Amino acid sequence: MTIASYYPWQHTQAEYFSRLMTEDQLAHALLLTGPAGTGKHNFARTLSMAMVCQQAQAMAQPCGVCKHCLLMQAQTYPDFISLHAEKNVISVDQVRELIAKLYLTRHFAALKVAVIEQADTLNTNAANALLKTLEEPPQYTHIILVTDAPMALPATIRSRCQQIQFNPPDEQQSIEWLQAQAGGIDWQPLLRVAQGAPLKALEYHQTELLDQRISVMRSFLSVFEYDANPMQVAKTLEAVPYAMVSLWIQSLTLDMLRIKAQENPQSIENPDFYRPLLALANKIPNALLIQLWDQLLEHKKIYDVSLNYRMFLETILITMHKQSIKAAHK
Image (cartoon, rainbow, N blue to C red):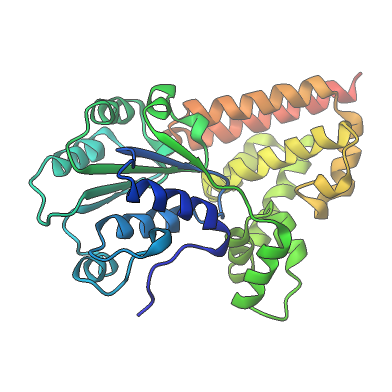
């Protein structure tokens, strides 16, 4: 049996929460933020187990052997609730069900803990319903929200949570950890493509995600080079998860802005596409790239992607296509 634990690069956050728990200063609502692949979800689960553990160890580490820990590991602890997106959205009905469970009498003397994964996918009604509970939470209850995109959450939600940031570890620490997972691999290129996130690099290695990324990036570039139909590309990309498409198109746009700012090539998030990005960056005006970046961020905030994913793709790709044509005629 594997006992839940934090990743090596999460020492600072674990120490911080250990102190809060010892001093009984833990906020009722926590917001864990940071790039995908940095271990926020595992941290939330491990911290939840430590909160209800009957003999928690130093550094907010659950013992893994008490009754509560065993129930948590078996996913049968009655006072723990996990909520995640269904079809890319968390609905108001899901939140209402969560709230109803939080107000039920606890089965054990320990705390009641809820973890909301992908909190940025809360739709407007769900966020409003949750806000009331964050303002007046039930006694002995903690709610942990986890997100890669905190700015997609309403400011009212963010302001009522204690926010904790998770950044990618330094490259050497990441490579050491990755080598322990699978030795004999040159992890540095994968880590750069994964924007420094070790779990994302490992996922690229273990799945076909890297090949999928290459295909998606080539599709983006073909639209920028105005030799592909944006509507047809949108139809093709609809099969790729929204989170991945959104991440990759943002990184492509940001890389071109970095190139135009003459930043060190080492700062580029997509080094394997440096040459075509350089060529495009020299063609497309800075103002058009900034406009696209702003539009990407706005779409991430307002789109209910379970209903409008195709529309999101078409809108962004048509914008890219138009900007490229404008640039070509200047």
